[in-house]
Image 1 (cartoon, helix red, strand yellow):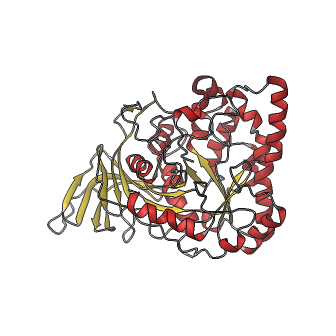
Image 2: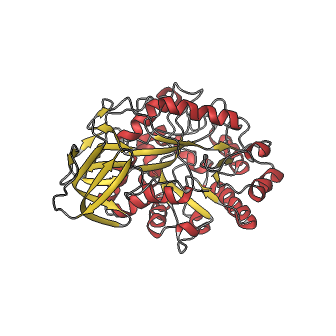
Image 3: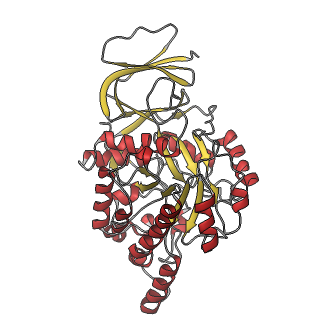
Length: 449
């Protein structure tokens, strides 16, 4: 197979511009970007991909997934979920530490990287988990090789709820790496559970989920994280923001490269509201909870104003049997990576975002925020991580085309206008119109520190 490929006459969306052009790939890298529709002469032999009428985007970088490997692989694993991801145009992901065992030591973290070398079709990084007592282990991390530190400042499993005040101050004051947080105040949540149990008993309907994991619980925890980061001038990235009130904590008038405190939004908070619980039920149960329509609209505004810096998925698959039950017993989280890009393009169709904004938040901004080496842009010398999309090829999500190991999607029955046709990872055509190159494996992401 030739190591030269050219994608001809695509509509390229990159760095705030949309233009007609062609991209030459040499091996793993982008060799040249040609603007205009003229015929570009290239050395022979060269594989040609004709992309007239199609859109070429940088590969999506998802900064928050739970691929369940190791220990929870009945739900998903690095092979199955990365396969779904590349089919959705995601070429790189960052996986969370709350697996079994939890990635809270260097050895356990590196075990996950070893798994990925043999299983992942996409590029990968794994965040190190913070506990109340592992700060000395955190100090051993090579920041060139690890995306950041993940801290649960709210309800979590095992020992990953960090609630010790001394530990919190030490994390923000002693560590130079990016601290990434899940922010929900556990005391507020427990008080709300007690209140609604007294009113309704143990079998609380799903519609009460956003009242239990309330806007106040989110804001109280996020505000505290921002306070600590501001106090110690440390780098903080707050995951999966879900409320209008939290938007007051973040800035829209500072370039991303200059921000020390940044914000992430997720596709499901931009798509669904609490009015949808009646129809979707536990399919849209996440932590933090999907909240009101006014919250959804405020989050959309925050994306457009750049208060929200990154859009991700928080992909968290569960078997459907685990999603059954009441508000207090059904598992929280859902699969998203196969459908996140086309869902955001559907919101573009609705006039809520521009496509340039979506590419910025899903491709460029994660690369800038995490300082990822040579990814996130269509630029000569960068890795050839790209996705070719047909913006006018409608399809409907159903059981036959869902690729998640868990076998379901909150979007089942939804028709999207756009379809992902092809996905390149490090210059390899990994996904091609429903077919996968199963021989390809992604690379470990590296970071400019």
